[in-house]
Image (cartoon, rainbow, N blue to C red; front, side, top):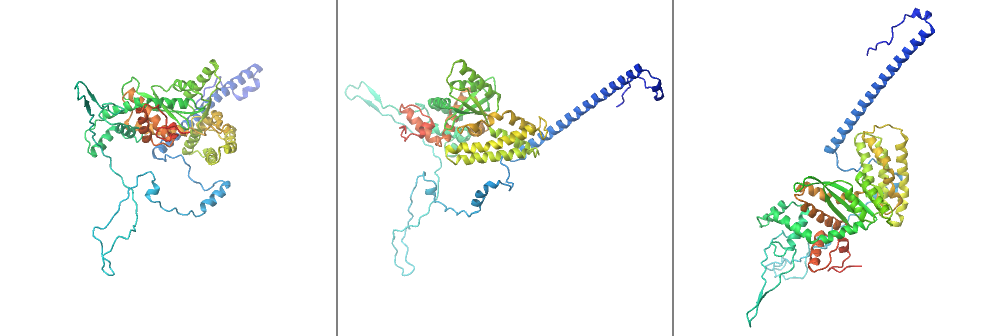
Length: 525
């Protein structure tokens, strides 16, 4: 690049006759030239660094997209063969021969399935091969078992309510009262309404497919829209149990929270809605809203006794915690301020993404997290009182990660996957390590993310909801079904007994309460 001189060049032999003032002018000109060249050099360096960073970022994005399309979905690291020496005992146990377990009979493997005994006899008694005499039943049997299934059957029930008359004056007729039902006078029984709702919201079967399955069983022409209306009726009927779930989550000290997009196909100006989920160890509660604003979480937290909110690092949750703490302070609440407890799975996932982008520097953090999660898994197998021992052992791994991240040994552009992972870890370090101080706090928010799995799969199956009414029905059923799973309760049994109890005038109950009942409907201890 050509550079024009700021003054006319002076021949070398003229320097001897230059005055002091002329030399000063000459030196100032050279200084200006040097500064100009320095600025240009710095600008070129900045452009070079920008292009290198841009190239690095594009390569990272390419590898990330490639891994998402063609890579494995699991985040588990492959076994390297360089396991910790402290696991020698575990390795020795694994090398020992594990005796093969005897295959159980179906009656032992499935003890809750009804057992039907079937005798197989010969129509004509056989003859003895030795003497030819006719043989007789010895009373002994050779037993074998197999599992079978009776295909779904549909029945039409004709209900005849008898009418009674007065044989003396013939002035009055009375009809036997009908049995109480979810939809009195409706075309579908309570059993079928429950089956329809559970098929959709528990087994995630679209209503059109349910009708096709019924047609293959001999009932053709079931209207999907009519069956959807029955789910709305059942949701209204069990609404009391849904409301009690909210009472359960608002009374907990540790609360999980997460949200996922929900498509509103029609019925509202906004098509981008969100399904908000809140949960404890025994209860799950969903609400559907047309916003992702933190005000949704604030409305829940302000009614709650929550002291710790377990979530990802989403600004909406930070806002809701800040608003709730301000609300408690202004109202002189005896409750302590809520603290954010962040999910370590998200932090580990970012290092895993950096590793997939061919960054070997991420291995240190991934190995540290591997040991942390190993200790967490071991702590779950021990008595609760010993949990803090394992938490204290985890501290050294967090300290080593923080020390390495702050050391600045390696430079990573802020927009690179490794730079983002380190910044995420350091910025949220306090929330990520808060669980080390309290054994009741979880290491991550995987529980709530797992509870969102079924609604997300359902969203992909039926694409969204057609009305606000449908969104509310989905929230009610997903809340109760996922709460059943948390309590290891069969959702179909729960809804059958819940409907029976409500028809008998008993108060509604949640899956956690249902688990403690000796049933029939009597609360346990």
